[in-house]
Amino acid sequence: MRVLVSDKLSVEGLRIFEETEGIEVDYLPGAERQELLRHVAQADALVVRAGTQVDAEVFEAATRLKVVGRAGIGVENVDLAAANRNLAAANRKGVVVMNTPFGSAITSAEHTLAMLLALARNIPAADRAVKDGTWSRAVSAGVEISGKVLGVIGAGKIGRLVIERAVGLKMRVLVHDPYLSPEMVRQLGAEPEDFPRILTRSDFLTLHVPLNSETFQLLDESNLSQIKPGCRIINCAQGGLIDEAALARAIEAGRVAGAALDVFAKEPPEPDNPLLKLDQVICTPHIRTSSVDAQINVSLQVAHQVVDFLLRGVIVNALNVPCVSAELLPVMRPYFELAEKLGAFQAQLSPRGLKRVTIEYAGDIVDFPTAPMTMALLKGLMAPLLGEVVNYVNAPHLARERGVAVVEVSNPSAEGYSNLIRLTVETGETRRVVAGALFDGRDLRIVRIDDHQLEAMPEGHILVLLNVDRPGVIGFIGQVLAEADINIAMMNLSRRTRRGGEAVSLITVDSPVPEAVLARLLGHESILSAVQVEL
Image (cartoon, rainbow, N blue to C red; front, side, top):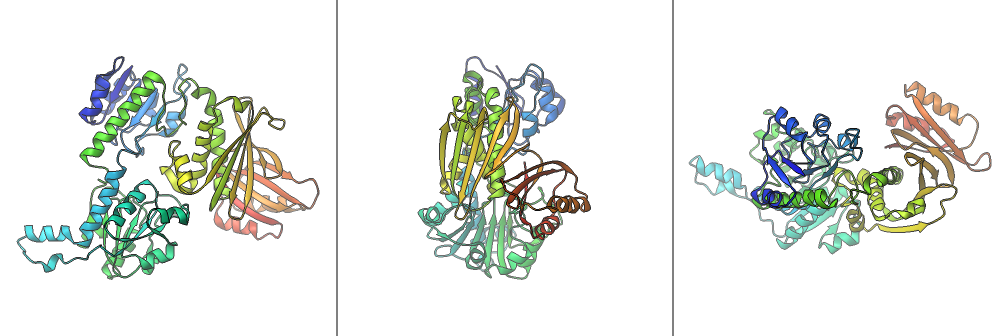
């Protein structure tokens, strides 16, 4: 087996490859594009950091490639869609993409605390003053953090490490995480708080959430105007969480005392970014994971994972497949896809307040191990809520830490289908059932929503409508979509037995449905709900 390492890797990680019998390693950090394409054609494994762009061209050239190992948590430089596609006639398994999600969490949390302390005591300004020949204590007057209120938005793995350390520094910690139960927050030694009040109560505010449609510019002009006067803001999570121009104005106006930023919406930031001109802002170049210890940790982890996969078929920390043996993966891949799509479908129908998830496997599917399918389903369920941080490995953990009970049931009877996955999601107020089946071993279908039987392909933009079964409703829906220049690709309808009861429509359209169009649909007296789902 041949391993190509195309970015810098610690000597400890390289030694794993060099000392493993049956493995040959080509170490080409910083390889030019053509050199990379030439060598990857002979590689069974490719190990990268952030420098190598692993795109469709690389996968097309890599006819022997079985696995890509990313030393680190981010995979922005790896085209996961290309990894999943068939690569050549002789290799229809796709390529497994692995990362090392746990090697740099402590380093990231410690960088957040370092930024917080530097911001509190004006350390960069004091450093500049001394080097410029000014010896004045007044220039570096700061504030204590002991007894101050730290607001933590997002309590995932890194957020929790920050909370733990902040509590040790005698800070009072507030947490806003809508997907974490209040009991879990209190177990961390913190106090749960809603979003508006965490803004008005925090002396320091740190962000630890993924970037998605819900969190884009989470701190915008409006929210920054509500923040506690004198608050200091830290963002070592994702660029785009803060409206940078609005933050600059809030600092200039004196409402925000300062900010410490390791990430920006555009990296590197443009020279005219107003935040770069403010002395109250500390900037670092996306170095939250850049410590010697973290680099060694992720190098060792990725080397062990790649060796285990090549020699023993063991899949660990995979981002595009659940963890099963390499031999079983091709057979189970369609079931994983079905499970993940059912989870994503449910998450967009019932997005908040998950309490209990029941997964029933029925028919032939029970002959396969169900735990990997549950991992895929939970990934689909959690990803729309938490963003790209969710993968097959951490999805069950993220569900547990948010207090979501997960129950598996096996049933040899599949109600007329050869196989069936039924997903029941319960929130504090609702209970919703969605079921899917695999036809001819490869065609995915949604076959039930609550009491409604149908047969819909789970892909693309899908408009899910619940309406009273009356004449004219379907015509109204078609008219509204047509006037908005939205083309209907497929339509699946189902009603309960009697006319005038509730009916469900799954309408696949060629483009997203704007909010204004959804509002117009909901204005019809017979349409009870309208939700847009993207799969």
